Amino acid sequence: MLGKKYIILFSLLLVSCSTSKAIVISDEYKVIRIVDGDTAKVNYGNKPEYVRIIGIDAPEKEECFSKESTERLNELIKEETVTLISKPDEDRDKYNRLLRYVVVGDRDIGAELIKGGFARNYPWFPHPKLDEYGTYESKARENNLGLWAECENDN
Image (cartoon, rainbow, N blue to C red; front, side, top):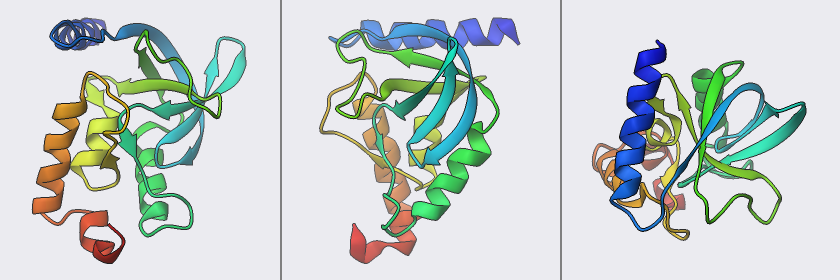
């Protein structure tokens, strides 16, 4: 298991070297609570912190497919130990949440949510996986997955 983690982290570093903004490896943290489809609360050091997943936009509580998106993130990471990966040019958002890619084992959680139609690619803030996430969203749209099937009038 440890070897797999390092292969993933090395792969992420290789991807970051091909972009103008490198990503920075963080440590592992225990997820305490899922807030919504793109935000979780983790034990960060000795205190709880909110983490907003970089590069995705899940429906807000009042929007179509919000419940399903939140439930899917819950299935993927609740009570898991996650690896948080940051980028050096952006640590927190305007709500003071940590901005991180979230990885469990060899799974990029943001990518998983987009691939299944539980979140959209979030292109308004550049990040190393922007093109990759855009491709995943296009495929989810083409295959009418998740919110792309259920919320067609809202998108």
